[in-house]
Amino acid sequence: MASVSAGPPFIDVCVHRSVHPAVVAAELRDGLAGGELATRQHYLSLRQARLWRDLAAAISPARDEGDGMQAYGAVNSLIGEHFDGRDVHLIGLGCADGAKERRLLEALPPGGAVSVTPVDVSLPLLQVAADALSGAGGALLRQPVLCDLTLAAADLPQMIGEAAGARVITLYGMLASIDAFPAIAAALALLRPGDLLAVSANLLADEASAMERVAAQYDNQPTREWLWSLCEDAGIDRAQAAITVGALEDPGAGAQAAIGAWLEPAVDLNLELDAGAVSLTAGQPIRLLRSARHTPAGLSSIISAAGLELLALEVSPSGEEGVALALCP
Ligand SMILES: C[S@@+](CC[C@H](N)C(=O)[O-])C[C@H]1O[C@@H](n2cnc3c(N)ncnc32)[C@H](O)[C@@H]1O
Image 1: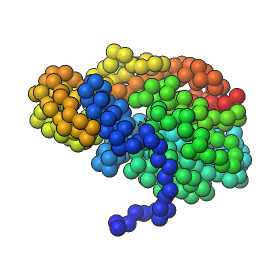
Image 2: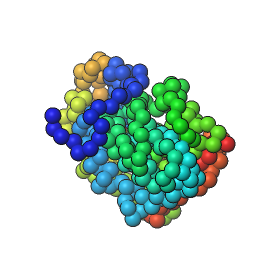
Image 3: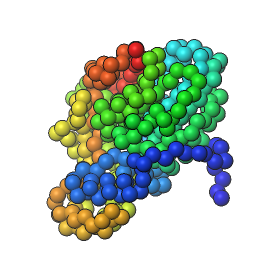
């Protein structure tokens, strides 16, 4: 066994039915047939997880120390002040590699018992998160949860269970590609009076070239490599189709604008998938990805529509990343 640098020798993962191979395979078949794929389809394999981590490290404004990380850092400090050494249970919804949750744990002042539950749809990313979060800031790693947040909200309370202290739930980097209301519904299923929700959104900066800058974050080789991974696994050859990137007419509920990425078959394709055969028609695009951009006002409306009290909304220096902190009354 190749060695990994740190982390527990094994983890006991709670696996929801929404990630059953038959469910995932049927979703892929139906998405290709219907012209629109679910975002989670791009995170599931080892290769997809690696390619996504590479591109997030290289391109994401959220991970830029001089930009997005400042907004997350400011919210981390507020969370630390709010709990002030009391017991805390951090639940990272769609946590990927857990990098942002780790920084939050490390920012909490010492004192109370701290535990953490990573939640994601990707097993490879959840394993990386478990390594990153186990022991971070003295936190106890609880059972990681593998699920589709949009399909598992009703079961989340039971899967996550009870731990000492108030909950702080992070919903970071999710509103770009999942509709805000199903994503927030997963958090609402877990929030109790006095708990906190920290939610981030990619923002549309207030300048003329803002959409061009957003498009450049997707119209690049690392992103294409990541998106091709799913297409190639589905049996599509790079000579048979192209990936295009452009603005989307309908940005989705609560969003201001969105960029989409499409697969455009150059020839008719007959794919044999795990869940059955699908035919794609030359020239008929399939949307691989949607990445929505919000405004600070739109993000606060999402928080208030969810019945939560906005405590703070931190915007990064570039205006491209916003992190809101809300209290469950
Ligand atoms: C853009 S990444 C954001 C990751 C991380 N929270 C961050 O801000 O860096 C989206 C993450 O959500 C996960 N994801 C996508 N769709 C999901 C779904 N329906 N349910 C649960 N997780 C999902 C992906 O596996 C990935 O880890």
